[in-house]
Amino acid sequence: MDYVIFDLEWNQCPYGKGKENPKLPFEIIEIGAVKMDGERNVLGTFHRIVKPVVYQHLHHRTREVVGLTEEDLQNGIPFAQAVQEFFAFSGGACMFGTWGPGDLTELQRNMKFYNLLSLIRGPIHFYDVQKLFAIQYETMKSRRALEYAADFLHLPKDEHFHQALSDAKYTADIFARIDMDVVLAYDSIDVYQNPKSKKEEIHAVYNGYTKFISREFDTKEEAMHDREVCSTHCCICGKTARKRLRWFSAGGKNYYCVAWCPEHGYLKGKARMKHSDEGKLFVVKTIRISSEQEAGEIRQKKENLRKKRNQKRKEM
Image (cartoon, rainbow, N blue to C red):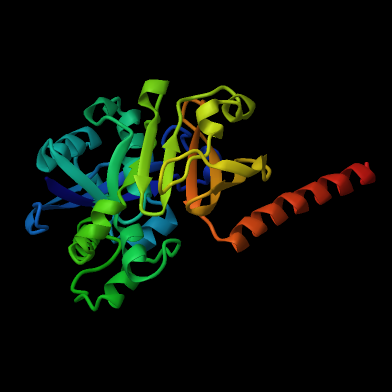
């Protein structure tokens, strides 16, 4: 399988959020990519500048960062042409890689705006090289800037950062240095095109945690009454784990629980409520191995929330 490591640069409304197009908050203006074979040798590169349609003037922050002028953009090609050429370059059987999860989401959002989303089917498994770098060299939760990672690995910095092709090259160079065991164990899943039915729901098993991505629901209450959403299975052995602390809302989007596996000990669950572009709700649930201390912290979180609610009632 080939790998296509890509980077995007985008513009936003230069006149403030109140005047942006809600269907396209970020308009892609540059695509850069590096294609690698299964041994992670470079096969070729891709670069296109995209002529903007929605935001034809550069936001001041974009102007400072990307190194493109409005004249450069006016000499670019239409997005539809650029993205079709990008997929032709990528080929059919490839795995995408990016620095962080944002680029793949914005690529699909732009494609949807131009009625081109049928070119790629989701949810999409991909490699988040930023996450892989963190897992191999630091900690799972660490997230570093691309230039930091380049410095950490003592890569030659011959090209400017924040330009699509150069950032894709740096990302590919870092990707080539990640142990293949780490790469294969920790792929990521982009859910911009989220599961629509129970048949499409995703169950993924990783080293030390599992991830479940649900179908769509109308309300949070409906989601949290779903049997699969509420279930807790050990992320190591897969057996049902009995809840020690039932799912509770921490206010807003996140729910937490604590469970116990007789063989592997404490587990902590987190269910995040996410919304599709159409306003439908779906759940991304993770179950992880937990220490007794972490389990205690989740219990304390619930107790603190209970005290806050009681205090508010007294003040009413």
